[in-house]
Amino acid sequence: MSAEMHQQIAEFIAQKILRQPKRVINPADALISSGLIDSFSLVDLALFVEDTFGVRIADSELNANAFDSIEQLANLIASKK
Image 1 (spheres, helix red, strand yellow):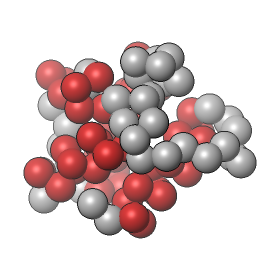
Image 2 (cartoon, helix red, strand yellow):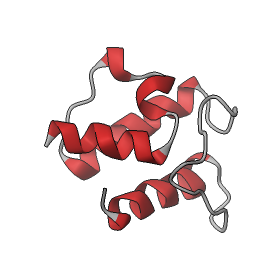
Image 3 (cartoon, one colour):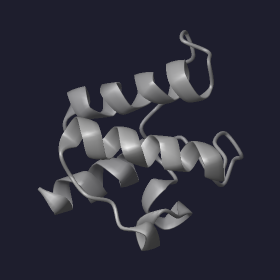
């Protein structure tokens, strides 16, 4: 997936969810299973993805199978375009 997409998602997570703007989040880093983001943050991330990338995320996709890494999330976005 595009490095730009990975960067946009990583920056959103670091700045808006974690409130640690200098934190580096790698595309393969575990987000949910590591406890980095919680279920409330997952909804914020899904809304960001929908608004930024113009895709619709189904409620059934809000889980660690689709959102546990930036790579997984980017693949989900690409499959919906």
